[in-house]
Structures are given as structure tokens and as C-alpha cells.
Amino acid sequence: DTEVTQTPKHLVMGMTNKKSLKCEQHMGHRAMYWYKQKAKKPPELMFVYSYEKLSINESVPSRFSPECPNSSLLNLHLHALQPEDSALYLCASSQDPSYNEQFFGPGTRLTVL
Amino acid sequence: DQQVKQNSPSLSVQEGRISILNCDYTNSMFDYFLWYKKYPAEGPTFLISISSIKDKNEDGRFTVFLNKSAKHLSLHIVPSQPGDSAVYFCAASGGADGLTFGKGTHLIIQP
View 1 (cartoon, chains in turn blue, red):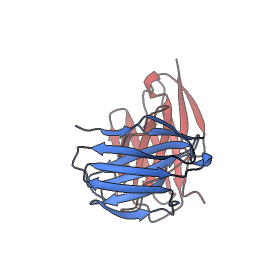
View 2 (cartoon, chains in turn orange, brown):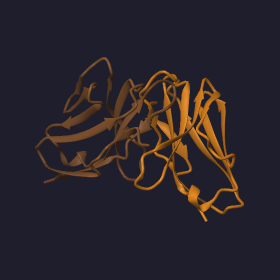
View 3 (cartoon, chains in turn brown, blue):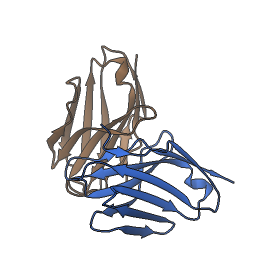
């Protein structure tokens, strides 16, 4: 299995909702990442998990809360989001944090109303 | 300040000809460079990479060239095919801190 999967594909939520994005990989990768991509912009790094521990948080607001329950799963919990948080959220994984090739999932298209 | 720059938002190339996509970087700590291809509504797909200790890496129709002194890299696709039409992102890494992406170049292959 050489895929990174993400669910859901699309999500529409109100500003008071709580929702979660899920990411899964079964490649035995020990580093997992969350990126945010706005339209016509490059992906921007949000969080890095290294061996299931949060190693990088790129000054992301606390309304985004990552979680790594095990080495195959990565969640992004969302609460009290703003309309400007609407974007494509991409999950990626790599063999380990020092391994540069990252494999991306298809993304979750999030719309905040 | 953009650390990875792709100055051409779009590039149109005739099928069968060579496509050359360019990328410049400013951070001298970057030591590994990657190219990703992205179709609409999909995640980026890894294409090819190069370490800073090399100046060229080839994989089939794709070749990446790195000029460290100029802090410049390029992706050559030859021959270009219709399925190559996509947005190409240049990305750079300086260690275990994720990737820094350029803004992307939209490559259009014309029949």
C-alpha cells in the first residue's frame, strides 16, 4: 500500500461546529505532516509529527488541533474556524523526518460558512 | 519573504517539444530539492528530486538540474506529452522541518 488517504474529501462547516479531518498511511512512515493550501498558492506547512510526537507547529492558531493516535493515523481537529480558514488541507508522510520525499494525500476541501 | 520562487505562473509548450520549468531559492541551508506535479483537486505527486551534492538527476523523460552557485534549479521534460499538463511545484528542504514550496507553474501542453 503506497497511498496516503484522507477523509472526508469535502467538508462544509459553520463557525461554531467541531469537526475532524483524518489521514492514514500504511507505508510504515514515521513522519506525518499537515499542510494548508489556499487557491493559487503553494502548500504551507502547519504541523510535523515525528515518531508520533509533535515536532513542529508553524504558529498555527489553536482552533486547529492535531493528534497522532498511532504511527499510521493523523487527525486534525477543527473548532470555531473562520471563513478565511477555507482551504485544501493536505496530509503527507515520509519515511522519517530526515527523509525528504513526502507523499501527499488527495486533500480535504474545507469550506467554513 | 519567499524562499522558493517560481517566477513563471504559466508555460505553454507544444507536444513533443522540451518543457523547461525554473525555480530559484534564497535559503542557502536548503540541501534537497523536489519537484511535485499537481492536478486540480488532488494532492501533489512526487516527481523527481535532487540532493545538493549532485548537479543533475534523470528519471525517464524528467531531468532536474541544480546550479548551487546560482541557487537555481530547473526541471526538463522531454518529450512533452498532453498528460504532463498540470501545475508543477518546486520544493526545498533544509532538514526535518517540512518542505517549502514555490508558487507553482501551470504547464500547458498544446497538441
